[in-house]
Image (cartoon, rainbow, N blue to C red; front, side, top):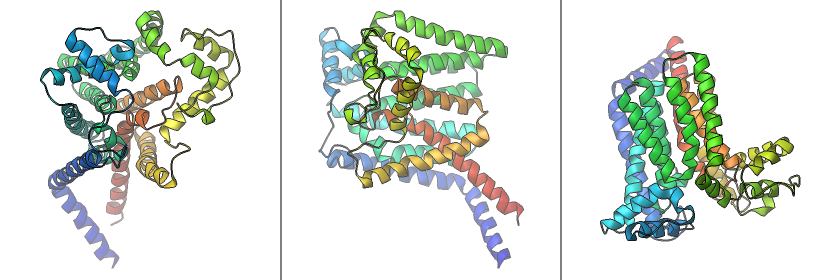
Length: 403
């Protein structure tokens, strides 16, 4: 009986390996169809987002559409519009061609499909497993919390896709250190930065990665990386535009008030009072951190925690279970990846992108919705796909060796 079972397992493994391409293509077709179905549902009923029919407009939509009109009429951009110039230019381009606003949504959906392929390719290259790539892209395309943002005239969808492209460009660069790949990576990085200001955190990270990719001594790489971070902080503190952009979000005020989740004062922490700290400059927050390091670290950690585990007081139990389904298995599989592949430079880059985005949340606030989660969730899915491939490989080897 055991021999028959082992034979069946062996034959099944061989059949899967010999029909891998067919299974993969079939799987991608089904996933793509499901992705399009989810987007149609979101457009038709809005059941996975705001419950309204059609293209979604919310909060910052007017900032982008008004900015596009300003560009087309030759008027200057106002307030924070300059921070989102990349996204505003896309809307302006569609308006210039007299296309409906829905064309922006079509672009976001098509770009998300391309990003899913980039995620697949990156995971495949890192792990050597097509399964890892399939799992990563499938989770990205079918997660309703991510899909819901493709129908919005907001930066979330495109920015998330370009974070994936940015990571993919580094993976290609590691495998082929050609001038062409450096140029492509830099162009993708700049596009990501100008779609949404969260992308600025990628600049020092990627410059360090570019330096590390060169064949120089370890000490030079370390000191160059530290120097870049210091120069980046000093340069940003001296740029008036950068300072104004940061001050719009009132980071020092949020720090002293202990804001963890925007719009939820009941979740605020009680922080030490420092009335003499200058709240008109974000550098005043550095003085506060020096005086109260542990309280500040605690606040930042809780903000990051609310982003990683997206629970809010008004969420139902059903909603929380759905959230857990989409993130907890991914986090557990990520741990497997880190246990076996933490020394791989590609994994270090993935962690740097995740930590960089969480750092932005830690020094500002967590959102009341899932917007800040989706920027890094695809990277977690990539790590999860790799972790699953590692686990299956170990199980397969044990089965074959026990026969």
